[in-house]
Structure formats: structure tokens, C-alpha cells
Length: 187
Image (cartoon, rainbow, N blue to C red):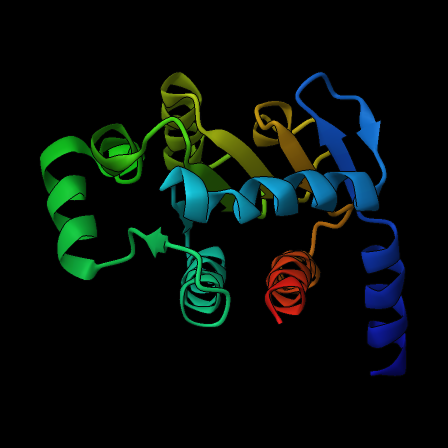
């Protein structure tokens, strides 16, 4: 267990952030850009949308709830079983997040796209739809450095690991850091 925690600590410290031109950002620069955008949501009337599959869906739900309840920021997920099964059945699973983004996202919104592999077609389709809408796109991925999701976002967080556990814990830590900073600023 000590080795697991040591390895996790090293991965957290080594988290990489890049912008939409693949320029390296410090974690401070990346999180400050996000925090400024999220802080403006109340005045702009925008919302924060979180998407993910499996464990990443759990992170999305958890953090959207924290943003809404604890931070006072309008936030949502598309994890309702009826919505997912309807869209999957009628359109195909690769469109399960894209369609709600097309229908509900607005230019002032922020999409957090969470994918351990960065290769899930439904996440990539939703990210592309959010870009078309003019949303700020924040990505969280892992596994391969050249994963497609990491190349799409305005701000991209990458965890250099192929372990779902490490990647998901790190993604949750990044999201919790943002929520904690918002709560701190809000008093």
C-alpha cells in the first residue's frame, strides 16, 4: 500500500496541462484559467457540464453535484439511465453525450470531458459538439500521451498512467481542487 500511495503521489505531482495549441501550461496557469471561467458563469448565465463513462461518469456526477450544491455554480451531467438508454437505442452510444450537448449547451458554457483513455468515441463526439457551440472545453485523460481527447481541449489535463485507478483518482483530485478553490473564493 505504501508503494501504491507513493506512485500515486508521483503521478499527481507529474500531472501535465496543455492548451489548445499543445503548449505546456503550469498547473497553476491551467487551473486559474478554469477558475476565472467558472467564476464568470453566475454573471454570464452559463453552466458547467461534466461527461464521462463508467468510473469517469461517477466522477462527473460527484463533481457536478459539488459545483451545484457547494459552489453555487449551475452544473449538470447526462447520466440519467432513461436518457442514456434512449439515445443509445435510437442514435447509437457514440452520440449519447453529443446530442444533449447540441441541444442544451450554449456558447458561455464549460464542458469537462473525462476519459481515462481519451479515446471513447462518445466523449470525442461530445467534445467536438461543444467546440462547435463555442464552449470552453476542459479535458481530463490518461493512458497514451497522444490520445485524441488531449488534443481537443482549450485546457487539457493528462495523467501519465495506464492504470484506471491512478488515472481516475487523479482526475477526481483535479476536479476537487477546482471545487475547493471555488468554495474558498466564495467564502
